[in-house]
Structures are given as structure tokens and as C-alpha cells.
Image 1: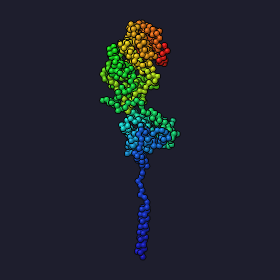
Image 2: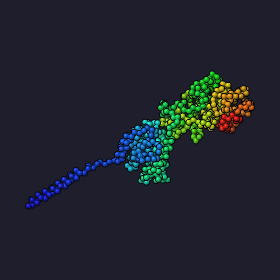
Image 3: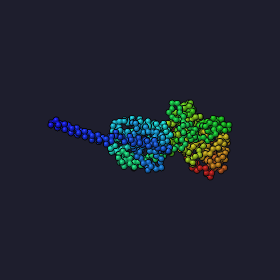
Amino acid sequence: MFRFKHRLITLAVFCSLFSGMLSAVRADEQAEPTPPPVDKWAKHYHDRVALFRAENVEPGGIVLVGSSHVEGFDTGKLLPGRRIVNRGIISDRIGLTDRGILHRLDCSVFDCKPSIIFLENGVNDLGELWRHGTPSIEEVETCYREVVKRIRNRLPEAPLVIVGLFPTRDNYAELNPMIVDLNRRLTRIAEDFHCPFMDVHASYLDADGALKAEYSRDGLHLNEAGYRVWAAQIENALAATAPIPGRLDPARATSQPSSDLLWYDAKELTIEGKGWADTEAFYRRLPARAKDVVPDAVWSLSKHTAGIAVRFVTNSPRIAATWDGGGAMNHMAATGNSGLDLYARRDGQWVFCGVGRPNTEKTTADVAKGLGTERTEYMLYLPLYNGTAELQIGIEPGATLATAPPRPAEQARPIVFYGTSITQGGCASRTGMCHAAILGRWLNREVINLGFSGAGKMEPALVDLLSELDPAVYVLEALPNMTTELVRERIQPSVRRLRQARPDTPILLVESPLHPDTNPGNPALREAFNALKQDGVKNLYYLEGKDQLAGPENGTVDGVHPTDLGFYRMAVAYRPMLERILSTGANPDHE
């Protein structure tokens, strides 16, 4: 009996276990297998990359590449009329892992053939550093540099705007010190690669140094008000990076041994101070046909580049030059005799920037450094007492070089100075410091300098050449080289010849500044002026010599040739008269 009961119990237990196992097996058959964990941001990344690769983007668009700030940007609404290519991916990083901008440059940038690129990224890498202690900010910077390097190498002509990181607040406020640090690093990257840097950070800060609450929906991401501020900054950047008129093709630039600069032939830029195009060599002051009609001394001195200047626009923080160089006379600085002199146009005024110091032979030298990266108009004066066969301008790679804009129509005609060694610039310490050059900057006029040291004597052949020009005013200041007899013989016929060729062009007769009260040539000039006026010659003006060099301390290097002080005083003396003449214009009834 016991044995029978035991078998029944055993059978019941077995049936129960079998039934449970059978139920478990049936349950397993009905249930789906448990999937592995899914990284939704990895999936989103790959989905977006696949979308980018499938798109057929029209070339020339504006590429925005970045993470959630970019993907969430409603550019159709906030940048209407702009052809934006949005290459943002939520949660994306710069590229230190197997995902990131570094790994998708082909479909996100290069294949788009953009006209301009805006790169905004980095906060997600800082988020990883904040939460997990890695990657380091130095690693983020290194990877960011690699991204910028690859874009600049592949698309050197497309402007790349590096966008700083936005501040954060609330739950993300602890990121702000790291954001400030990385923004400083991004600024250096922008400078190193000659890229514009968009400082969005400062525009979004509140009094506590955090993201303004009205610009964010969660302390990290922008709301519409925040995007509107960014959209305005993008519009400003687009205006600043618009196509550059007159830009020189970088493909035409050359390299030089031991130089990291790009070198351009200055002949392709805006050249001023040349009255004739048909010169024997490019940087000459008289036409080739003058060789057989002017005195030998005049022809020889016409090979000097006094008054010739190159105007151009660049954003290079460093400007260098290669030119012939040369020595100097024993009473004149080499920088004025054979050097270069650079000025920048800022707030409507020409400001000195730097000087090219010549060697006695061909010279390559920096003219100015630390100029900043804003596109600026420059003017470079060539040597006063030496010739120039070659002139190349060197700028940093990634910077642009363009011809200067035309002068305003009302200032388009030049001032022609004809005279002596003083006119030519002896003995200014820099090539832009003779009075003719100073007046050109003050009056915003091109100057044609026809000063010939010791040889400015109003020969009829020179006057015939002068009559071929069409200036705003002739300034005739040849008296220091002319005897009283020559003044009486040549002044009136010269003025009449110019008036015959140019009936309305103003003519300014200038006394000698040397011993003006006792110089016999000055009364003779006054007599000629009065006779011409009595004969009805109009638009004829007269400048006395007594104030030209007047002032405490002597303004000459040798009792004759002005120093910079003397030239400045001369420019001050000339200025009111020239302003009066230029404001009157070619008025045949005046004077």
C-alpha cells in the first residue's frame, strides 16, 4: 500500500513538472526574442548621413554644419531667400569617436560645393567631458583643427565661418567655464586658418554669464527668439563675405623659398601715379617717346618711381613685398630713397602701417604685421629716388587680395605736380612723406609726381607732355631749379601752352620756399602771373613761398631739401589753396 501511494505521488509530481515545462516551452514559442539595446542617437546619425548622401544638392548653397543647434534651425522661416543646406545632426560631435563631423565631411560639406560654410560644434564633446571626464578639451581642439584643416585644403576659395559655442544655463550651467575655454581655442583656430570667427557667445549672455532665459527652451537649446539673433548674425557674416570685386585669382599666386606667403604681381593691382601707359618699362613716369625729346637728366630721373603707388584690398594680417631695393644718397634715408611705405584707409583717413626697409640689392621683407583680418584698403608708395623693375606683394595663405575700388567720380582726376628735387621727394625719410604724397592722402586724390631732381626747368618738351594729361589741377613748382631769366622766358609760354590744351584746368604757380623774401625768382614769377591775369587767363592761382617752410626749428636736411617736418609744413601751406581750387573745379569764369 505504501509502495503504491509512493508511485502515485511520484507520478503526480512528474506530471506537474512536465506540465510546467510544457507551459514554459509554449510561452517561449509565443514570445519575441529580446532585442539588443539601441542607441537612438547613433541611429539618428546614420539616418541623417544616409539622407545627406542621397540628396542632390545644387552647388553654391550656404552650408550650416553642426549638431542640434543646426538641425533645429528653421532657416526657411528665419533666413528667407537664402539657399541653406542644413547639415546638422542632433547630438553629433566633432569626430573623436567613429561618428562625428570629421567622418561625414564628404556628404555634409564637400559634395555640396558650397559658396560659404558655417561650422558650429563642440558642446556635445564638452558634455561628455563634464559627465565622464573624457575626452580632454585639448583632444577636442586637436580634432576641431583637423576638421578645419581638411575643409580649407579641399575648399580654399569657400569662406569658412567658425561659429563659437553658445552659453548654457540651469541644468547645463556647469558647462559654461568649459565653453569659454573652448571658444578661446576656436578663436585661435580661426586666426591660424584665416577664417572669420562668429562670436555668438557674447550676444546671448545674461548678467550672471549664463544663457539668457528668453533665448532658450531648456537651458541648452535655442528657442525661436534665440534663433532670430543667430539668423541676424549669419546675415551680417554673409554680407561681410560676399564676393570680392577685383579679387586676384589665388591660382596666379607664386611661392618663394623660405616663405609661407603667397606672392602676387603688383601690376595686377590698382596702380596710381603713372600719367602714361606707353612707358618703356611698367614702373616709369614718362612715355617711351619722351626719351628723344627731354633732357638726358630728366629721362634718367623719370625711371625713378616717385609718386607711383599701389592700391589694394586685403584681409591678410601680414603684408610683405619683394622689390629691387637699392642704396641711398648721403643726405637721405634709405627708406625714402629706395624703400616702400604702407598706409591703411581707416575711418576715411590714411594711416601709416609700416615701411619696407631696402637692402642694397633685391629685397624681400615684411612691410607690416599684426594688421588684423578685416578687409582693408591699403596704399603702398614706391621708392622716390630709385627705379622698380619688379614688385610682388606677399600675403598669408587663405587671405584675399583684390584691386582697390575706384575713387569717387568727383575725385577721380589726379593732381599733377611738376618741379624739382623737392617735388620728387628729397629728402623725405619715407616714400609717402613728401608733400605731394601727404596732400594726396589728405585730399583723397591720386597724385602724379613729375619732380626731377636738379632738372625741373619747364622745358617746352616737358610742357607738351604735361598738356597730354587731364588732371584736376596742375601744380607748377619748378622755381628752385630755374634762374630768374628762365622764369621770365618760360613761365608765360608754358601756362599759355597748358591753357591751349586744357582751357578750363586750374593751374597753380608756386613760389620757391628757399629764402622766399630775397629769392629773385619769386618776384619774376609774380610778374608773369600778373601779366597772364591781365591777358585774361582764367583759373590761374598763386601760392607764395614764405609760409611753406616757416616755423620753429629748421625743416630741411641741408638748408634746401625738406625733412619730414619741412614736407609736413609745405603740405599744411598748400592745403587751403588746393581745397579752394578743387572745390571750385574747372570754372572758366573763376580767378
